[in-house]
Length: 241
Image (cartoon, rainbow, N blue to C red; front, side, top):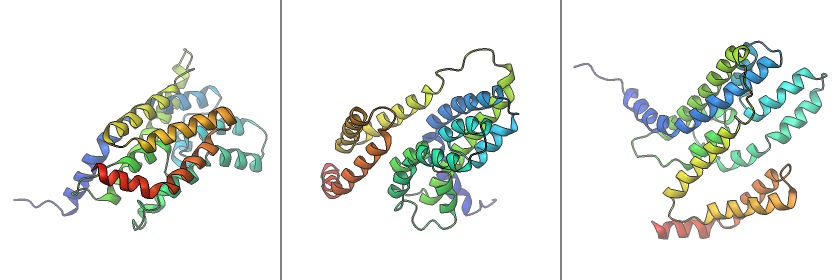
């Protein structure tokens, strides 16, 4: 009987755990990635532009903004500041993933580079069986999400010239995907204090700062409150189990 390589079962177990959890991301990334590809195409760029941008940049909102930056005058400092402000929320994502990505060796370099909102949501909330390698699971989730986005952007760039209808509103698919991830996490948790805290603080920041400036204050308030309440929340979670 042919023996299976020792890494075979480990890879299969990690892939079986990662693939189903990324299917909502697949749906969102394909539609939004194709929208981005079409947008770049109608803006005058060939198909390989969105393909290359999706591989190298891999930051959805930044890639949309980059279209206008590429069409405008050369202003590297302005581009740097705009993209930094747009993706500053990833600072908070990175801090919360320090423990999860600890000790993963070279994998951590790619995990940091390719961390997105959706990858963060999946890796942060995943409860893994004992037979699943943690580092390999995080890596596969990240690679799959990256491939979904590249595929969508490339297809959009190729098919962009054939599109004759308005693509306005397609970006709502990302909102729908986050709602699904939130509901899935809500159903799995016995205590909803952290979720309600996040919703409440976000709503307050939205009212105080407005829709254009609420994101960073909301992320900061959530990070600070969860840090201060970490021990009580952990004790409550332990009691619930």
